[in-house]
Image (cartoon, rainbow, N blue to C red):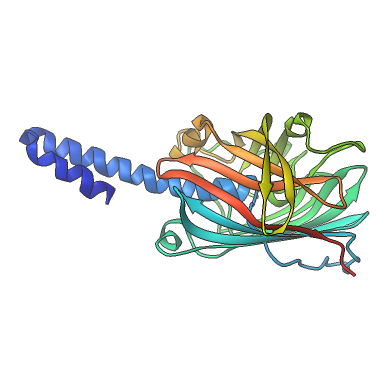
Length: 308
């Protein structure tokens, strides 16, 4: 549609400009499609703002003190393109989360089909330490499967399928880049120390050090404003809105369109809401401007419960 609209305008152009304008239209269309893929990967890897049913811990499922069940709608320019769910179980010493999402219609062709990720780990002194993470995607579109073990926030075992191609300009992932990191799902669970309100400007002042198996990057948050959210099932009340910036570290090609595009993108936001019964915040809404319009992942259910 974009190509058709632009090429139709070339009828009144001099002949020597028709080819140039058509080429420019095709280039813009390709960038728009790349933008869609970039948004999908960034949202999945930065926040995994879509998630689903709880997977029991491999060592035996502990009785959860708090469970978050969240459903998300995914849209671009106000048009629904998919949906997802996220479920988190957490007690005094352990946590587990699973995310599932799917795109609909033509977006299944552009952005891919069903996606899945899961993580589990330990809780201690206000810190979540992942032990195992797996997913059927990565920020790099070539990744089809990731299995990763961690200890003390350090990657100890990694299996990426297929192996990433050895591109000449790819920034190498070193051992140092695999230390002091969390997986994308764990990054979406943000502890707030203390006993006071969790919804303060200070809650946004953090950097999320993520590694998804192929790409080491930071998502830096900073306070933007306070707002209010409501859903039919679950949380109704204030939310803290954080500005969000993407900072690649390794595993990427510096000249890749998706990298330069995200680095220069302004206006990305993450809205955080509390998980009742815990000192954790989680994404309620994520928005990313794209060439196709504003991409939004927003909760339609955000419900905290205490299992019987």
